[in-house]
Image 1 (cartoon, rainbow, N blue to C red):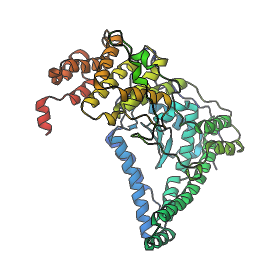
Image 2: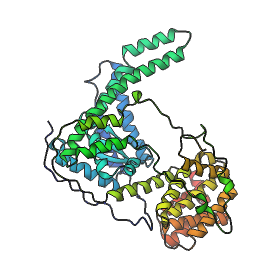
Image 3: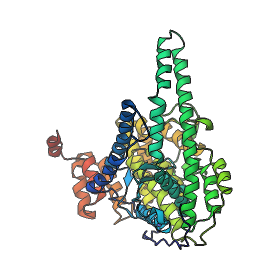
Image 4: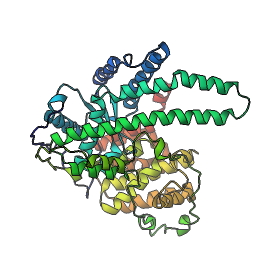
Length: 485
């Protein structure tokens, strides 16, 4: 039984202040070291489903599923998707540690938090105490609401729901019923595709029924953890309701593209915004599934269930230090994430939208130039479709408007837009490393014969840093190219 404790939850401000009106300095060197990751990954080797499944094939299935989770963790870290050694992750790890301190039965659980750099507003438990908190979710909820979500994921781990889910999956997909149904379909001459689809839907429905039950259990136990640490039932219920619409577009206002890209020497052509269409064409397809087949119950339903639970509050209150600051940081980090992932259409969209709130922010202005350069570069190299999507019915109208502008603009237009925006906003800025990087890109466009020296020239002014390494990779010297080959 988890005891209720009278605890004052205090979260210290781990995040140094930034003035978002002036600039933003992205989080760097956030990856966990290889030894630390290896130690955490070894924890998955101790997870076993053997007590819950019978049969050699089912056990092999479980071993593979657990190993896939472990490999997924290593893969995500390899490709810079996991944040661990940074102040933002430390902030929420501190909240987890405070929840542990408020719940005596959690003290021996080694919870490890990673922030996952992804645009999906979600959180997940991988088992073995590992919790993913997605960057996008931080931008949608305040830290107190995020803490409730973390308690929910901690409850998943305590109840070993990952193991139960894998065991249930093995039972359904390696079980006799599934094999018999498959054999029966294989003997049929006609309508096999339809029958196979019906079988998959039936089996998946059984799995989701099981998964939804686990979600409700995690809600209930997570609520106990949360309220022991000073949280309130009202906040938990409000969070569940908020989660119901958390996947709606973050930015709802339209962008005045002409305002940003209209210059005396190169007036903006409004024809570039015409013929906006929404179609099924697109590189990133959004799928929707009926609620009956979702692994998580409808959030409004979960909120109603929570509101009926009777738990006495501990009477403590959680600190609200830096709440809004945390959300702001996450939005800026999502922009930086899109640039790193080479999704320059989404990065440009975020930069322009944020400029509506912070019109003098140097990081945002430099990001606009950075994206325009990369989009121009993609057009020249005929890789434009990898960086810029088509307008689509699954995208909000404000993003579609930007996509229409980009799709209607050729490389000459984008280049003039880049030069015009730089001259208007960044030309006279000195001593800013990011602006210096963009200045180097502009210099290479004007004098391509000097591109090999771009990195060295940058270092002379700004020293060796993240951007100097980017320039060296982007414009390697010929002898270095030969060494690589």
